[in-house]
Image (cartoon, rainbow, N blue to C red; front, side, top):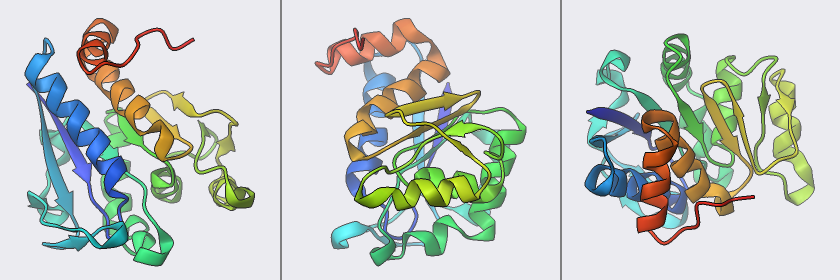
Length: 198
């Protein structure tokens, strides 16, 4: 069985978190490998973007990275406090520990900025939110990241993307990293998504 840690920062965009949660749920139910998802946050309850309150399964302080096979990081909004948690020392340390063990880390949209700030993307390829003048991409570059103009970028164990529109693709890519392409394609098909993405 595989276990994915879903990091829910204050101000997380719920659609992006839901994409991870739903695809992993489908993969666990219809795929060839059991995959369980555990939600985690810095606080015992968070308020997501646009006000939805969520109670995570566990607190980040209680997590042992050795118990998990991958880390999923949805993005969020500055105006809802996303970077208060995403840029915290605790989040940075967890990201570094996943990377040290070369476990998959998948981020949607500005979730990549949390990875960038942790230092593990220095000199590596990644992307993040690209609209509204490209300010978020400039921030990512300031962390020493080679910013790539692509919707989804994979560099080794790290997957990053540009916007909420890429959420499902990132989630499927994470399943592929954990269980292989045939299984990820099976999940895509049963969820009604095409497997030919050319």
